[in-house]
Image (cartoon, rainbow, N blue to C red; front, side):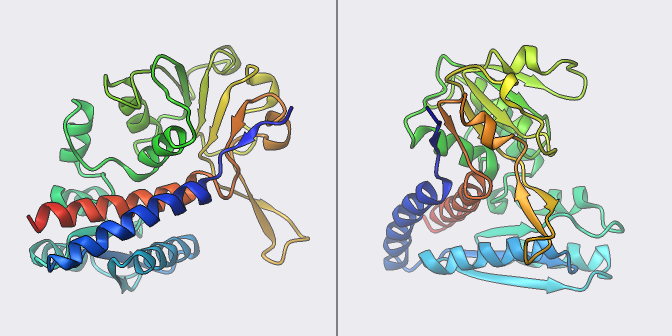
Length: 293
């Protein structure tokens, strides 16, 4: 029997509907949630992502602005802009779209954003709070994965959860979240990476498998145990001369074969991606709620 498809679009739509109701309630109190997105340069993928974020904000009533800067923008000019957004009481969330041009130190820029406006959850203060289990803005993709699981009746508690990939954006923070003694977590976590050797000996043991390696077909059917829940975080472009765009998107999982082994699986696209944007909206709303108390 083929695996149940964990539909990120449907789940994200449910979350957005709930958030839209909260936005209306907040506006009644005279507080308009506001997200400022900074885009530096003309990276095609970044432009698409930023456009999707802005549309999602507008759809649920969050005020959103995209500040577009030339690729040659000086680092000091970008830092000055972030400082101004920090000081603007009308702005509740700040997102600087990555990657930045090579001449700009991303670390400096992200660290300048005030933690209470860091809706991406990338500031060291929010990362530190996450590590010790304190309240903070959760990074959007890990938070989206957790919500996708829980809202589809997959509770990680007591399960063996294997994460393939240890990036600071997905693998590491998600593993940290799942190890904590909290509702929707409390799992036994294994993190695999380039030093792990034979991935199969780990992935085959997983009750829940998170593929976040950034490489197509990292996870094949023989690496997955029967009944495993598979979450594919990867978004990879594969050349496709038959496509109008010249490519199509695939994840890190061999979807067609793995779905015949797993009990549930996310598609690419339409799985984790929509959940990431939903969590950005959620973080922005939380930031506004705290600011307007």
